[in-house]
Amino acid sequence: MSRTMQDVEQIVSDYLAELLTPAPAEAAPQAAVKVVSIETWRDADAAGRGADPRYLLCSAAGVKLAVPMADVTHMLPMPPLTPPNTTNPICMGRWRHPSGEARVADLGAILSPDMAGASTSTLVILGNRAWALGCVVDDEPVELVADAIQWRQGAASRPWLAGMSKEPKCGVVDTAALIRWLEQELGP
Image (cartoon, rainbow, N blue to C red; front, side, top):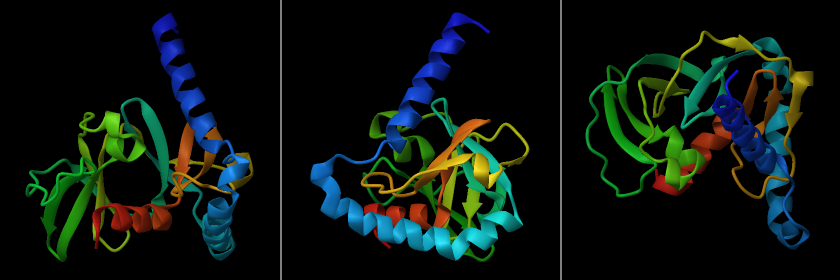
């Protein structure tokens, strides 16, 4: 492995590790509210995670996130999009599909505003088809063992990041929390 690739992997590893670090004590009241929603999701979805351990590895700007396959409705090569009706860099636009319209979010911009506009080759349609992610998907779905994931607790920031898998090294997405976050950021 080249030195540059090792550096990139270390940067990504450090970035994801920082996301999993609990919030400082002064943010405790805010974190307490977040913990309730995350713990509620974990309790409600514990059986579902065990039912389908497959995840789709989506990436943007070198950062990989694992999206539960149970929440992926469809994926296709990035189609032309209707321009967004907002200047928020998270919104790439809208895509019309047979059963309605999906708002398309830029995975890079979700990770960090300075990653907006990262290369996207795939449209990943989520859940009820109202939201989709613009990202890169190179691999077939992978199986992640729930016990091998470091689950995140007390999330004061990025409430959609449920945890981190060590192998493959990636963040694990709580899709329902991501959709709630997108609706809060971009409106209904």
